[in-house]
Length: 446
Image (cartoon, rainbow, N blue to C red; front, side, top):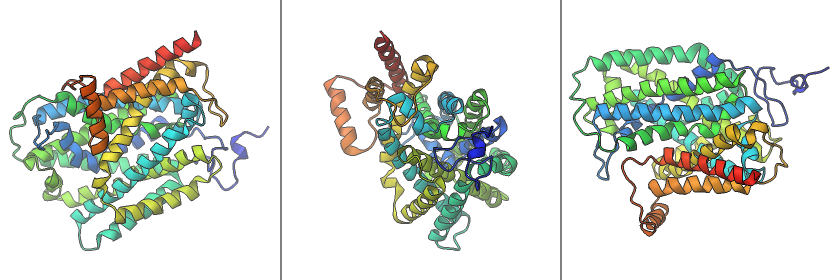
C-alpha cells in the first residue's frame, strides 16, 4: 500500500514541509532540531535594544527598576512565557496541523478566519520590522553602502530560507547555533570586564510590569508555534524544545542587553555601542545581525501557512516569495515605529486566545479530538470565553493606540477600576480566558 507521504508532489523532498494544506506534514524534526530553532529565536537584536522595556519605564521614560530587579523580572516573565509557548506547541505536534488551522477546532472554520487575518497582519508587520532592524544593525557595522542595499539583501535571504523551511531549521542546528553561543559567551566575558555601575541602584516598583513585558515577547511566538511543531516527532519533545530552548537563550540575551544598558547609563539608543566597542566586537556582532534573518524567516513562513487556512490549495512557495517581496518594499517605505502600537494591540489578541485554546484542548473537547476540517461548525461559546480574556487584558493594559486606549480608559472609569502595579495583563487575561472556556464548556455539555 502506498503511504500518504509517498503521494506527495514528486518535486518535494520527503523531509520538507508540504506545499499545500492538502498534503500531510512529515514528522521529521527531532528534539535538538526544534531546540536549536527556538534557541535562535530567543536571541534577537530586539532582546538587546528592547531590554529597556523590562525596567518598567514610567510615563517620562525613566526606568523604575534597578538592573538587578529588571533581570529578576525578566527571568520570571520569560519562564512563564516559555511555559505558555510550550503549551501552544503541543497541539501542533499531536494533530499535525498548523496554528491557524487548529483554530478551526477551537472556534469553527469560518470563525477561525478572523484571528487568521489578524495574525497575517501582525506577522507582515513583524517581518517588516525585522528587516528594518537588520538593516539598521548592519549599517552600525558598516555604513559604506546605502541602507536600501541591506534591506534588499535581508529580504532576499529571508525569502530563500522560507523556500526550504525544514531544511533551514536543520541548518540552524548544525551551524548557526554554535556560532551564536560562541558570540554570546565572548560578549559576556568582554562586558563583565568593563567597570559596571551599581546594578542595585533603583527600586523594585513596577516589578510585575517588567515581568509582563518579558512575558509578552515570549507570547508573541504563540500564534506560529504549531506551524513548526506539526513536524515534531513527539509532543513531549515539542513542549520541551519550545519551553526550555526559547526561555534559556532569551534570558541569556536579555541579561546581556541589560548589562549593555548599564554601561551606557540606560540610554537605549546606544545599547549596541558596548558590543561594537570591544575587541573583535564588530566580527562577533555580525553573527547576531546575520542570525536575525531567522526571525524574519519565521514570520514570513508562518504568514504563508496562515494564509493557507483561508486558501488551502495555495502553494506556500508562491506565497512566501510574494510575502518576501512585500515586506522588503514595506521596509524600504515605512517607519515601523508608527506601527508598533498596532502590533502590540494585535498581539494582545492572542494571549487570551491561548488561554482558551489550552483549556479546551487539554481539558475540554480537545481530549476527544477537534474537528479541523473546512466544514467545522462555529463555536460561539469559545468566542465568548476569548472576549472575556481580551476584555481583561484591555482593562489592565489598553496599550498606546490613542483612540483605542482612550476608549478603555473610559471603561475603566465606568467600572471604577484602577489597574494596580501587581496586575499582569498577559497572565490575568490568560487565566480569565481559560477559566471561562472551562466553565462554558461544562455548561454546554450539560
